[in-house]
Length: 225
Image 1 (tube, rainbow, N blue to C red):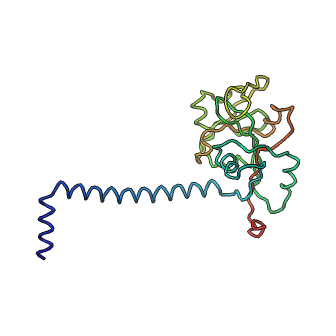
Image 2 (image 1 turned 60 degrees about the horizontal axis):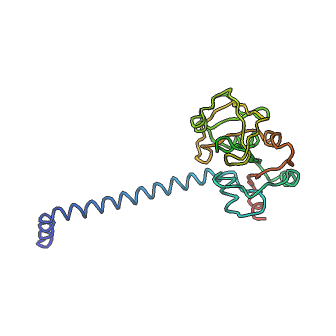
C-alpha cells in the first residue's frame, strides 16, 4: 500500500512528465486502432476488387503489371491479345462473368476503356444519370471525370491516341456522352467507358484485339488445373 501511495505521489510531483507519458500511451492505442481499421478497410476493398476475377488473360509480360493495369487500372498494359485467340478460351463452360477490355485512347489524360455490358454490370455504381452506351462511340463518364473535364450529357469530344495526352487526336471520330455515373470502387473513379466496338472503329486499320479478358471460375477444381 505504501508503495502504491509513493507511486501516486511521484506521478503527482512529475505531472508534466506523467501527462506526456499518458498522452503517448493514448496515441499509441489510437494508432493501433486506426491501423487495424485501415487494414480491415483495405482488405475489404481488395476483396471487392478481386471478386469475380479468377482468370486474367493478357499478353505476355509482368504478372504484377498486368494485374495493376487491368484489375486496378493504375499501370500500363503489357500489350494486347488477338480477339480470335482469346475467344477460343471464352467458350470454356466453366467461365462465368466474362469481361472483355480494350484500352486505346484517352481524353485529357483520362483513360477511355472499351468494354462490354458484363463489365458495366460488374462495376458497383450509384446515381446513374442518362444510360449506359448502346452503340459505338457512346460513352459514360465517371462523376469525377465530368467534374474535371466539364463534359455534360449530350456533349461530344475527340479522344487522343494512347493512354497519355499529346499523342495525337482522333479528330475524325466523335465520342458522345450518354451517361454519368458515380462508381463505388476507387479504381473506377477516373474512367470513361465505351463499347469495345468504339476502340475497334477508331483504330480501324489495326486488328481487333483485347487488352485483357477477366472471368470468374466458380468450379474450384477448374481453378486448380
